[in-house]
Amino acid sequence: MKKTPTARIDKLLGSTGYGSRAEIGRLARAGGVVLDGEDVLDVSRRIAVTPDLSARMEIDGEPLDPVPGLVVLLNKPLGMTCSHKEDGALVYDVLPDRWRRRDPAISTIGRLDKLTTGLLLLTDDGDLLHRVISPKRHVAKVYRATLARPLQGNEGVLFASGELMLEGESKPLAPAVLEVVSPTEALLTVTEGRYHQVRRMFAAAGNHVETLHRERLGGLALPDDLAPGAWRLLNPDESASIFDEPA
Image 1 (cartoon, one colour):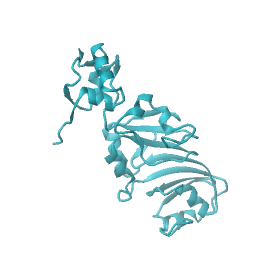
Image 2 (cartoon, rainbow, N blue to C red):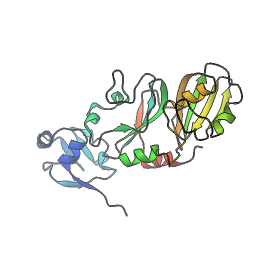
Image 3 (cartoon, rainbow, N blue to C red):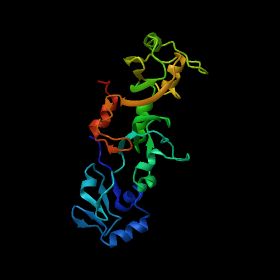
C-alpha cells in the first residue's frame, strides 16, 4: 500500500503559491487558514496530504488549491504558446496567477504549436509527464486536420507504411492511421511527437494543413462542452485513461 505523504502546513502552502512561510504564518494568525472547520494557528504542524485536502482546508475563505499531483485539461485556443517565456499569450495565462509560484512547477505535457488548438494537458507531476511523452509508451494522439487541397487517396497508405521520412530527418515515422472525413478533412492518429509532425506529414504528401485540432490523447477525449480557453482538473481515473487505447 502506498504511504500517504505528509507535509508542514506552511511548507505545503508555500509550495502551492500562497506566499512565504512568514506570510502564511501571518495569514494563519489572522484566521485565514482553516482545516476541518477549525482555525489553524500552528502552521509548522504536519498533516497528511490526501486528495480530499482541498475540500477540507480553506485559505482566506476559499478552498485550498489542488495539492501536488494535479493534472489540468485545457482546450487550447488559437494563438496561445506552450511556453513560460515567449512574448504574447501563453497557455499558463488562463490558470490562476498564484499557480505560477507552485513548486514543483506546472508544465505542459508535450506541446501544441501556436496555430494548433485542442486538448492540452498541464501537470506538476514529473513522473506522469515523462510517462505520457515517453516513446516507449506509444500514447496515441488524434488530430483533426483541414487541408488546403483535396486528398489524393494515397495518403492513408503512405502514412501507415512506416517508411515516410520527413525532410531533414534520418529515421522514418512510425505507422500512423488516417481516417478521411471529407475531401479536405481528415483525422490522423500518431504515436510520436516530432516537431510539427502532422503538418510536415501532409506537406510530404503534397498538401497544406490550414487548421489543426487535437481531439484525443490515448483514451482521453476533449469534452464537447469545454470551450476554447477553458480548463478543468482531471480526476485520477481520467488521468489513468490517457494510457488506454483510443475508443
